[in-house]
Image 1 (cartoon, one colour):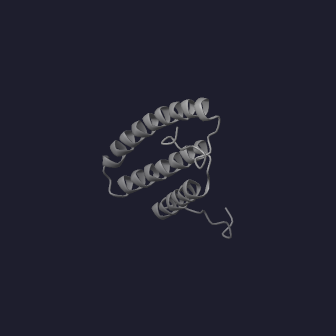
Image 2 (spheres, rainbow, N blue to C red):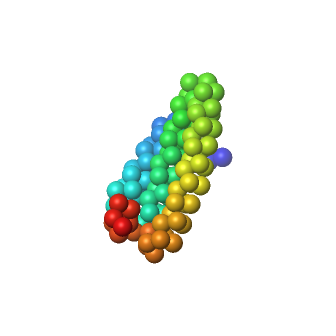
Image 3 (cartoon, rainbow, N blue to C red):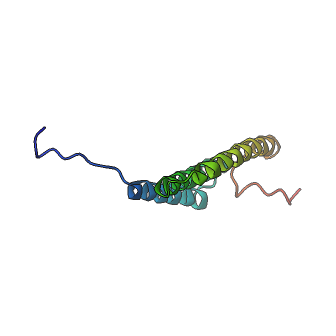
Length: 108
């Protein structure tokens, strides 16, 4: 193998930086977008960023606690998706929109 070819090794820092970037993208999506479905997808991106950080920290500390937390976060994310999407379907049937600015359930 030539000496000029260096093998790039991915470390825990790279995973944490990726996790922070994903979390920031998800946060920006929640704050900027007005479509409720896109907001739910951005929340899922944020939860996956947290999962990546938990797995990275658990691998760094040579413990399996991070994987257990990831399992619970994935279960909560699945429940959130099921309940959130069913609420969106009901709201869309009643209000004919999924724009969060136009949906105000307190008004008749």
